[in-house]
Length: 281
Image 1 (cartoon, one colour):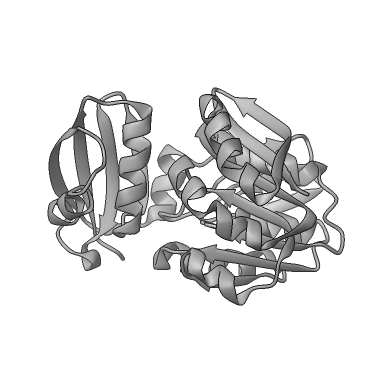
Image 2 (cartoon, rainbow, N blue to C red):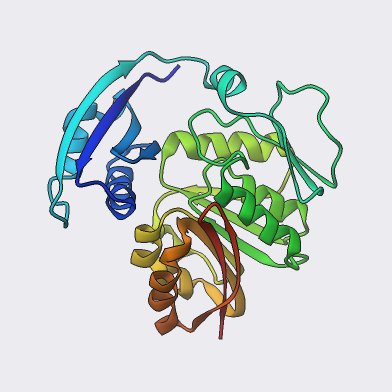
């Protein structure tokens, strides 16, 4: 089982923009999971990536805002992460009455048109977070039959798996974190769908053809930083669904997307979290 460092980052001052950006910098350094709050954030990183405090300090050394970070970490012994999710977090969820998401350990699972099995370990994407459920809602409404789909930052693979179940002809998921990538491969096999997974960052898009549907549930700063690459791999007339940011971030996202022919054509909002639909002209 993988051992982790639980790293606490206290930020002074602390705003949502600061914790979002700090999480983006730390994700690039190998951190896998984030829990932001009003005073900073807690993050997890495998011990294989190095000392948690040191990696965080190096990741935030060139932070582009005036912020004081107090960083500490503690060792978290490897455990059965599925058991942890079962005990504390992950319960079966039904979205729009059409899609049920559950794990292998769940009993008496509700019946639904689409049944997705997820054993999440440390990877993000169980359907419980507003952003994931909003993206699922978009996919349930979209015409996916025979369409090609790219899922950037696929996490557990949940969105790509649903796209494949809904008739997409080709689905490719890209995930930068190796444990999450391996978890996605497990879920592709577990759900018996046809989907390719790639362990890599946005540079992996260069090897792919443009898709009819482009998905990215990441965060505002990564999305705006890579929106040109996303647009280049979205067909004219294609749809892009973006999430991982707040309602007040919509103007930032749409302004970054506009130069690449992407315009807002739909939006879902829940608890200030947003899943935005863009169409490429």
